[in-house]
Each structure stands twice: as C-alpha cells, then as structure tokens.
Length: 210
Image 1 (cartoon, helix red, strand yellow):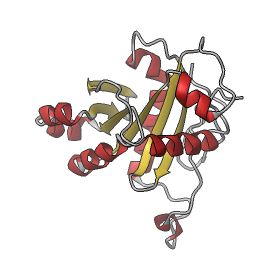
Image 2 (tube, one colour):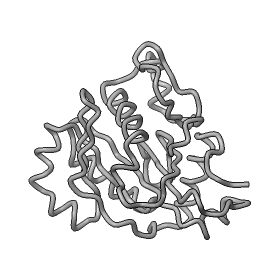
Image 3 (spheres, one colour):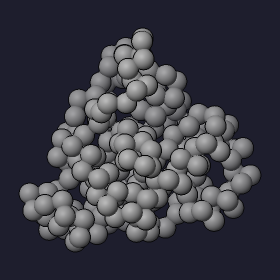
C-alpha cells in the first residue's frame, strides 16, 4: 500500500484532488526565474500525472514482489547526479521496523527506484536516467506513447545499460513497462543514503523508521 499521507502537494489551478505526491523544497536556480513561481509546464503536469498513476498501480506493475509498502516523492536532488523526477522506495510490510535510517538501509531489503520523465527528448532522458543508477537500485525512463515508440527502436541499448523504459499515457493513466531492469546495488552507497534522507524529508518521515 502506498503511504498516502506524504504531504499536501495540491494546486487547484492544474492538479485534480487526488493522492498527493510531495516535492522536496530546495534552492534551485530555475525556480527563481521571474514568473516561474506557480507555473506548471506540460512536462510538470505529465510528471505529476505519472507519479500519481504509479502510486496507484505500483503493486500490479511489480507483480510478485512482496514489497507492497511504498513511499514516493518528486524532484529529489542528489549532488553530482541530478534531480530525480520521482523517487520511490518500497519494502515488505512484514519487515521489522528500523530505529534509524542506517538500520533501514542495512537490513530492510527495500528497493529504491528513480524515474526520469520526458515528453520529447528521450536521448537526454536516457543520459540522465543513467546517472540515477549511482543512487538507486533501479532507474527508469518514462515517456508518452509517441515518444516511446521512437525510443523502442533502441531497446537493446536500454537493456545493455540497465535502464528501464516505460510508456505512460496521461489521458488514460495507462503505464506500459517495456523493460524493467533487475534491481542492483547503487553505484554510490553514500549518494544512495543522501537520496533516501531527502526523500524521507520530502515525504514527511514516510519511511518505517523509529
């Protein structure tokens, strides 16, 4: 079950009243540009729609997994490796609670997934998603159907670099997983811990700690 108390990210101007998906508040130059405040781009809206759809469909998308508890948050920055559009952490509900984040990292057998969401430039998205492997067990690129069709021609490349390729239709909420890589240990344990700290803070201590 997705923890749906993760914050209160709603904006009636462009977001329907649905499961809130929190965003980490941080200082980032592009958010300080004149007129940027309160403006949602098409890619912002697409990302939010995907985040909510994924939160609702995660159990079926990862059929067979016992890790049915999940926390999610948007725009998680990890120094040196970019800003994940969405970071999701899932764990087994029967796992014993950890007293600290270190205990959770060392013994919970959880899975972290970083998502890069793009509308058009899938090659840039693939490059960014590749960097997320430094701080997540899995990294997945999410594209609208038309863009995904172009990327599918290069599915062998996604397989070789171990990056997932999913399609998301915002009009129907349908998520199609064309390739989901096996979960592997993050390349940078330190950056992985940083990502988890920021995700947990954005999600208001949503991880089962303490």
